[in-house]
Length: 247
Image (cartoon, rainbow, N blue to C red; front, side, top):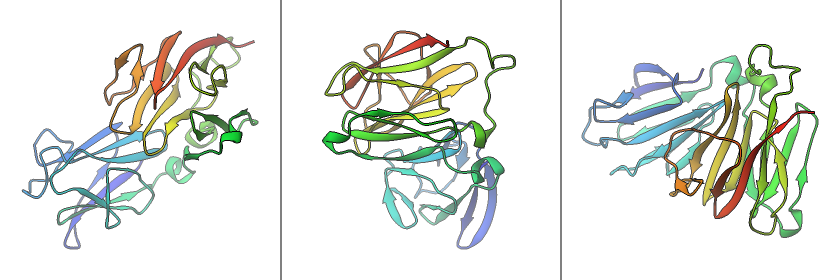
């Protein structure tokens, strides 16, 4: 489990364990981390933890959110990063075996037009989905996070989540969601992740001013359970989610 070390002027004030999927930071008392200082906005920043990764987001604060002395709107936190809010410092530490084992959120980057294809790799390697102008890497987190299907699920004919591109140049392409975390979207525009959990597949917004659209309705920042035949729209591209029984 990762943690934040809160300090001011070099004096450590306290340590905060990131036990929740969403941790809010701000001046108002309802925040998970309250910093009672006028330089801090009422709802200043947010940290989202998904599997082995943590994402920092500025919530349109008045004075801005800085990480390692650089202003940020969205930022994938790395071990040792220092979040700066006014005079306060929050050092991000990945101090547990799960986090030390490595990140499951791999870099996504713009792909060349002739790179649009789907590839697969053996368990423990990386699957790559190239679509709607980006290449997105997906890492198998089972070996690093201890994730496993529910008791008794292994070896059974459990449905496998699938994504099929419905629009754009890659329409018709499919991706098997066999990994614990799959990243979809266009970096700098809109990014979302689909996480495979013991009780289903969940869609979560990660980056971008607008949120993904599910069955014609724009989602919020919470993780949403996907159902068979759902239609998702991310970065202007529609895709279908469906469950395929394992052979």
